[in-house]
Image 1 (cartoon, rainbow, N blue to C red):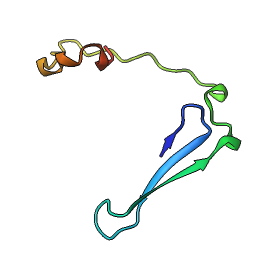
Image 2: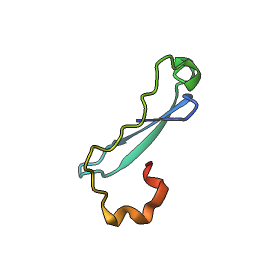
Image 3: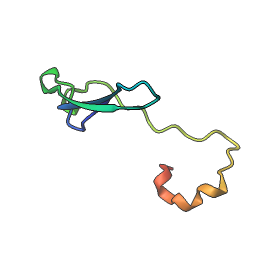
Image 4: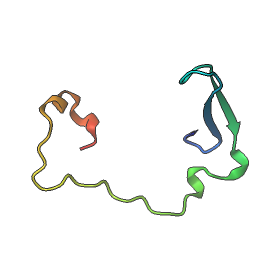
Length: 70
C-alpha cells in the first residue's frame, strides 16, 4: 500500500494470475474522509540514526554522494 503525500489517496496492487506476479491490477482508493494527512499527525518524528562507531562506508557507494542521506 502506498499513501499519497497529502493523505487523500491510497494505491495498492493485487496479482490475480496463477503465476508469480502475473496479471497484476492496481487500485486507487479515495481515503480523504479518513483524515490521515500530514496535518493530522500528532506524534514526533525521530532523529535520523547515526552510523555505529567503526562503520566503514562501502567505496562503491561514493558515486551516490549526498543522495544516501548522510
